[in-house]
Amino acid sequence: ERKELFHGLENKALTKTGDTVILSTNGLPVLKEDGSLKGYRGSDRDITARKRTEEALRKSEERFRVVQEVSPDGFTILHPVRGETGEIIDFTWVYENQAIANINQTDPQKVIDKRVLDLFPNHRGTNIFEAYEHVANTGETQILKEINAGEVISKPAWLRLVVVSMGEDIAILTQDITERKAAEKTSEENVFRFQSLFNEMSAGAAIYQVINDGQYGKDYIIQDFNRAALKAEGKEKTEVLGKSLYDLRPNIDEYGLIPVFQKVWKTGEPAYYPTKIYVDEKFSNWYENRVYKLPSGEIVAIFEDVTEKSLAEEAVRKQNDLFSSLLKILPVGVFMVDFVEGKPLLVNETGKALLGSGILPDANEHNLSEVYKAYKGDTQKRYSTDEMPITLGMKGIKSHIDDMIVERPDGSRILLEVFGTPVNDAQGKPWASLVAFMDITDRKKAENELLYLSYHDHLTGLHNRRYFEQEIKKMDTPENLPLSIIMFDVNGLKLVNDSFGHDSGDILLKKTAEAIKKACREEDIAARIGGDEFVVLLPKTAASEALQVSNHIKELASNEKVANLELSISYGYDTKKTDKQSIIEIIANAENHMYRHKLYERSSIRSKITDLIMNTLFEKSD
Image (cartoon, rainbow, N blue to C red; front, side):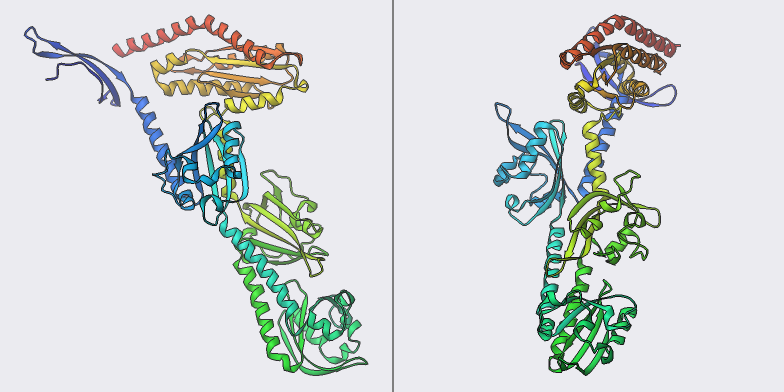
């Protein structure tokens, strides 16, 4: 018994074709003479398209939040707080997922609208906060590859940040690399401990490189002697490095140890050579030897007096365990080659999994890029051998690459971040080159998607206003003259939206963008800079050519129809011919010309849309 006016009442209805539509009803009560309710007089408006759009947006937001909540990487959206003069004084939370909340030790629900400096007062002046300010002020993406955030959040934390613009807000993709940094530190400490153990062990230890077939003492070239070995020889390390075992012990071939060396070198199996006296003009000593082969192919001989036997065995065990543990605990791939020829020495299990193969016997310093098929980014251009981090390490150069794609034996590809470094001996002389690498495929994909979204219009796929404003500054140079600008406006977009729904309006915009894409060259810049406005920037293009392009786009557009309505666009153009002309004035002139055309064509497009609406109504009434 409602007698008052009602507005926006939503209800569902069935059409003649059996389709369900959503209607918005406005009603006015009709009263009898005695004031009682007789009925209602009202009108319905089809809001099906709008409701579907709202539902699609809701689902899209739900999917976004679900993806971010399960992501192992942190994701934050912040809004800049500006002072009276426009300077940034703080940021407020718009959103943060659980991963970054775990790092910050915050509650994702409670931080919304809170100020960053209220929770983290030490944040101001840090590299992170300055990156936030830079992106918010310039829109330029900032990447902080390794940053220590411990002072900010009051707990040990190493982070990798990608900060991008989202219009008025900024988005931060955060990867917690604390464990990786700890692993790197552990790796360095273990290598240091290994070298310290080698030098400080009480037994004599020698490392030999084997040449020829390893049949004689001359085939074993000294690579390293520890302190005990040098003391036993009565020499300095510089006096023995590079010499053969025969040079120090001329009767070594008769001693019986060389066949043991050769067997170990060929089989890789450790061997024990029991106590035996060695005699020459200088020495007459009893030695006990244990012989091993390193992953590098070198031979290690541990020798001692019998009285030092138990200590030497313990030292060897620790040495082997330490070296094995060092490779197993690393969460990244490790690959090592010798310093002289680039022959692969070792690759750990993580490295095998990432590369899809272990050490390839035909690999050397000249063909590493070809054998392991390393490409630059998403191109088909291979890294030259000289550019490979493993090769740079052989030259004593540290390096870092974050866009190496390796094609594995099964044909699959993997994107790697690679760190290369030379491996030096105790004298600082390089003897090997080592690379550590990790899979960054997913991380790079997320970065590229964020970067793409920041420069493109989501509806048409064209560049957005932000990208256009950046590019026009770059292209406003004498080299690009004459520089032409064409402005386009879609005629009747609002009428189409109001009459046929926003879906039809979106189709209108997409078809306009397609027409522009077809007519533009690769070097041209096309962008959607407003609701119904598009712009094309044509370097090295005269006014006559700009006119041809404009007419071509208009002709392509006119061949398209949306809701039985011919697509109509208005355009205006102008050309910067000399360096003295202002590009701002050129844009303004093109825009003015466009609006004059639009005014001229407005009545025609309105008439066509009105006729189409009337025809549609008559068809429905019939």
